[in-house]
Length: 503
Image (tube, rainbow, N blue to C red; front, side, top):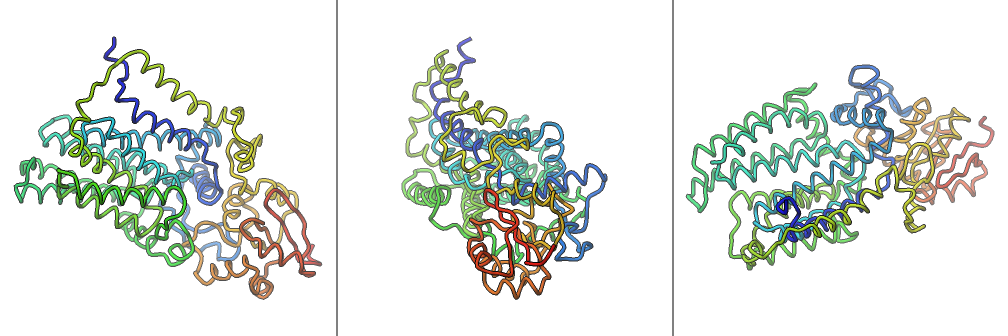
């Protein structure tokens, strides 16, 4: 019976995992990358077809083409919403991300041989992910990336000799068929397989220690080829690669969206990222174990990716921190042999760790006595669901539903919520950044900053404005002093303005 109890060694990563779960579960829902995806999922479900035009913006032709590459991820979000509302969607986010980091911790344990060393690796990986935890189709990529990494790691560290690990790789192609339709990060699955094929091939060619036999490398290459073929299982075929490439080089996204830009040493996730680089350098300098070619490719490839944009830091953490744990094991070889007792007390401690995570799930979180400063960040007691961020214009949407009409200039994130809650009220822009011309985004920035706003609004024929007073304070102040505009509505953060004389 005792062998079924967790050991004291298990408690180390479980403390980190539970803390991460508690934090993840309390991340509010911002409007930007959720509501419009949810609307597309609804349209796919009701129309039984994938849309191909923009549909919701009055500032563009309704027939302007737009690729919904994450159509399956959007449909799955809507099906969850249909089954259990926003609370179930948020809960799914929590489960998927926790499952992914659980697999990352498992991978660190395989590499290092120690749950104790897996714990700090998991803490670093989780810490640098904290700005990538919102609900959007990307949540489907987290567990898929972690599964790919774990299966490849198990295969290599079994020497390619374990039949279970060898046949487990056959799951990668069908998982890719799912991934390529769920989110654009599917390319990272191809990158992982490619790194392991090239790295292990070099290791065998150079006859380095613990290298795989050529037959095992060949099996890995075959799985890689089948995985690459599986990306064709999507409505656009090979064109999905061009879609991702266009998105990665889209000028408005790269220039205007913070998460596409290189990480700066500010904010907890970015600080943890920089700390991890320092730890990595020191470990490489002193560790007795040298990185294998595969390890080197993982470190260099994903560190380069992380430097290119904050949205990629999470993948660096998941891929490289287990490698770091393995090098720590060469510095502290006794970590894997320290006593680890199994007893009922450990099980009690695990349950105590998990109770707070359970209590902050969306069905019960509003009963938890959290600080009032936290509750100011979310809408509390609204029928839509728990933990909706205050930047969602719930109150303004109700006002516009009762007072429709006008050519509306809106804050970008508000556009996402309006697409879901009030699709008949067409928007000026929304978070589908690559949809709109760069010049329109430049005008949006000028208007939001109160620069030549009347001139630009006249050019677009805008007669109504929906703004966020915290994100667009300059525009709010300018309108308050402008006799050509009158305020219709003031909510928690949203304001609605109309041109004087326009009714």
